[in-house]
Length: 385
Image (cartoon, rainbow, N blue to C red; front, side, top):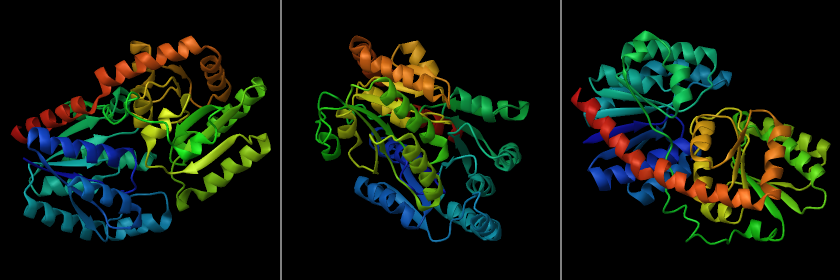
């Protein structure tokens, strides 16, 4: 079976990692071949390298515009919409896949092109917050051109699949996967050079690209409050993630808040390729996001047996409460987030218990093999429909 997986954004983040890891195992375990269609620009360089190294097929398009709030880019999307749609339609007719897998609510070209090409499609929705105009476009396109949906969590389903017409379509909830073999605390070593500088500190980490959705203002304010309330502890707060040119304004806002609050024990490291090693050297993981669906960085932290403090995003609260593997507070609540971080710092027994249960949860509920199996089942069901 041949599957085309379309991504209109090539920056190597959660969706790209999911597509890559699932594609590798679909080929080896289920004889399902994946080809990724993505934009050919500098943002895609790392993703292209990762796919090349993994032997995953891909096609990179020089012109592949997506919907965005940037007025200039949005104009380019509108101008080239029809030519790109025609190209995609012809390309799909030539490739003759069994299924087209489109990622993100803004990914309307792939959905329309696949229907015009007579190919079954699945629309993968992995967020819980979109501008109103994208939601309007989504509802129109979904009703006219979509065969089925993969939802990243229950909240995503509630957010998008909220009309009788869409509820009739086939839906499957598939959480973002974690590779519990790679993220295994028994085999990973603590050798990240940045963290080794702070080996005598309590290290509180978040892995997050710098943007509003990730709630980094909450993280900084939490760090300030924890530091104020535990003046005798040696603490370091670490943000690992990409700082894109388009987010420099937001990054400068974060630096301003950090300076105003005098949070001198917080560092931005930029992106890292050795996340298992980074997590190994961390004491507590914090997710401060405002919006998430299935936060892979949280699942990876669980797999590394770390105690996790998180805001109530996606299905995090549901999974934490059902499996007793983490602590949750409301979004944009730095005081409450600080309180549970302090609880994890002071109650070593609780932190150890949560970490142990976290690893079990990752193995039993979030492992990539279960995710790949669900993808395989979904593709086969769609192709036969």
